[in-house]
Image: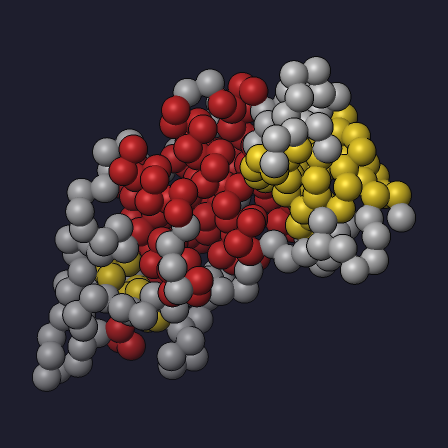
Length: 274
């Protein structure tokens, strides 16, 4: 069966001497993996078209029972070369793509995932701050995966979250609970070991992420310290769900000198009442 669809390229790696395996994301079919024959040749028809996060039109042939499709044509729709000019851009592109490699499924529609990644790339091309883009993307990836809903009510007691009092992310990293449920109790004041205090200003930013578009957020960007707290929360929740951390996240932190040797999900405020 011959199929054509708009896609976002996620990953490529070499196969034998002349070919490449390409993973791409489509709205209709989710994640697709295929072989681009001759892609490593000097004058390949795929030359310059297989950049990570590029938007392309892919044509491929698939046979029933085969894990890999055969890619026959890749036509550029939006090149990604401007995203790959600096080391930090390259690392971020790899980090964004790895989310979809982990969370998107093969042969399942992925309209919301596709729209999120597409709009994220558009924001980066428009010059929106990398950290803001990454934090917005992280939170929405977790929400679309159904593992980090907007903090409306406490999953432990069922009561409405009081954002003015902050919240707590338990050591398990499964999701936010209200300040009362997250506290250690009268016999053990403060937060339990490993819990993360989430102050009101971070709760307010999480709420904004749920209701304000990225372009509007960029016009009034949040302070860097709040984005750091969002990163810590996202990292904990992601690790709790996957039971491992994304490789690209560790590489990015070490390469950019952000890995201080402590768990990125731990915070100096852990153990204090929000």
